[in-house]
Structure formats: structure tokens, C-alpha cells
Length: 166
Image 1 (cartoon, rainbow, N blue to C red):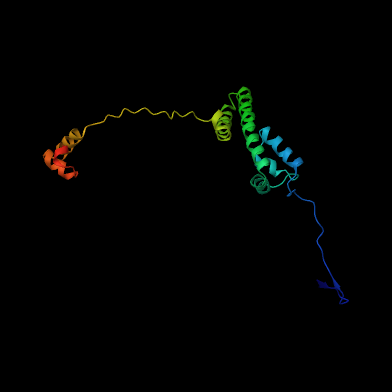
Image 2 (cartoon, helix red, strand yellow):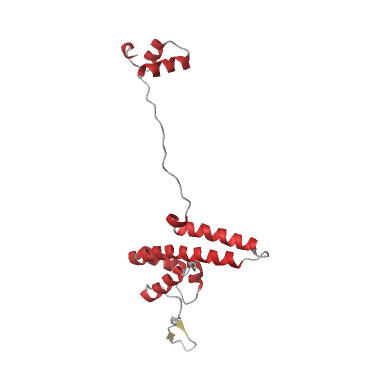
């Protein structure tokens, strides 16, 4: 409350100003998802003054499971759009622009691999084949005795086995 020069209290209220949307809306969510699927980055989408800020969209993803799942699916589709764009960049490269094209394609390959690792990520061979040979207690005691330059009886005592097991 402020007082004017006539000593009458007046209240000053800020008028609501139009701004970025911050309340979840299916219509805005659909626009965001459509632009993601076309290959546009969330940063770029949220830079649009008619779109909510990036923090708002991330909050929507966390608070709205359906929207979060749709965003994840849109990111997978986005990887396909990025993949298609890489071909366009390669096709339009000239000898003068080939280095820039290589850099752009390399960056896009990395993004596609992060967005859809099963489709565009490095393939890792996680199948390991190991041959395990089992040695008898006697063989292990003999090896220990050889390594430590002691008798097999001493090696047997050292590991705590009765002498009859060695």
C-alpha cells in the first residue's frame, strides 16, 4: 500500500502479463512432441517465446508419467529424423563444405546414439567365453610350495589343511 499526496491509501496491483505457458496443456505438449519428432532440440523448442521454458517441460515430464513416456518415444523418433538429416547433409556436401559436413554428421551420429542406443549406438559384444580349469587340492598345494620355495607339507600347514588332504 502506498499513499498518494492526498493521504489516501491506494493499492498497486501488477497486471498479469502474457508469458510462457507454465501449466500443463495437452495442446502445448503435442506441439512440443511434434517438434521433437521432427528432429528439433528441446533447447530450440523452448527458446520459442510461445513455448514453455525448458525447466517447465522437464518438470512436466517428471510430474506427468504419460507425458514423460511420450517424450521418451518422441526422442526415439527424433533419432530417426536426425539419421535422415545426416544423409541430406552428406548428399549436399561440396569439396568446400566437406569438413563442416563431417563435423555435423559426427555430432548427429553421437546424438542419435544417445537418443536411441539400441538402434544407433555402438554394438558391444558382451558374450565372454572363458575356459576354467579346475585343479585338485594336491596340484594347488604343489604350486604354492613351488612358488614359495617350501615343502608341500609346509604349504599344506600354511593353508590350514590337515596333512592327509594334501
